[in-house]
Length: 233
Image 1 (cartoon, rainbow, N blue to C red):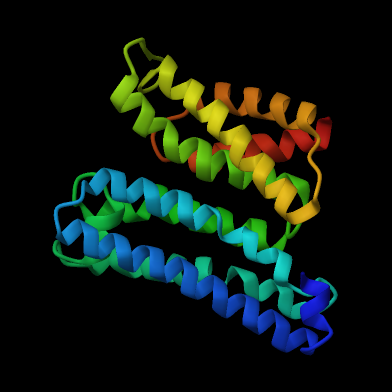
Image 2 (cartoon, rainbow, N blue to C red):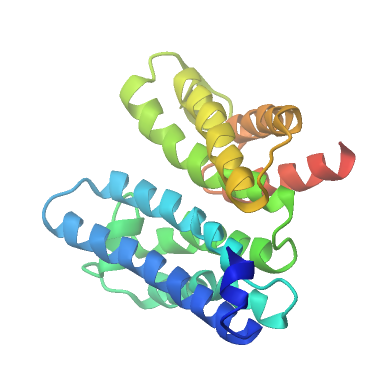
């Protein structure tokens, strides 16, 4: 796709277009969830939808011209939210839409934990690991797996365990299954292939790490696990 667009636009314009589309996508999702929360949509579920949608921003990488420096503009949506979360985490009022949409309890300081860590990971993946398989796997596990695990754990989690924080076997299985699915989709969209054995092994290790992780810190520990695994495997 990026090659056909490149026949019409210069690399810089092509990458600016891709960045604009990514910005529209991310901010539209947040805007929709803000609206739904005002209408009574569950705040915690809204947080997870934003989590999954934001983590899927890398699908726009396929549009970028990889030969031009402006490919790094892909992190602009994440970078803007990194700055916004820092500002809102310190200064937002209780009725701020980001506080309502992206926190569990309505405490603005929560924005400085999981949500901020998540955007920092996006910044790193979109620069140092742009278009690398480890980024696709990391964001699949972190976005889809970690995004849906609490939802399924809360609804279906009957078999609880408590190592660092209370979790459930059902939630951990959801992390594994949806993480593999999300990562596989990213691999197929961006590279057209997926090393399924490698992906599944990495997902199993990441699932164990997630089970041992404190709240919010898993947003760092999951991609770190993937980076180490891809270096060793």
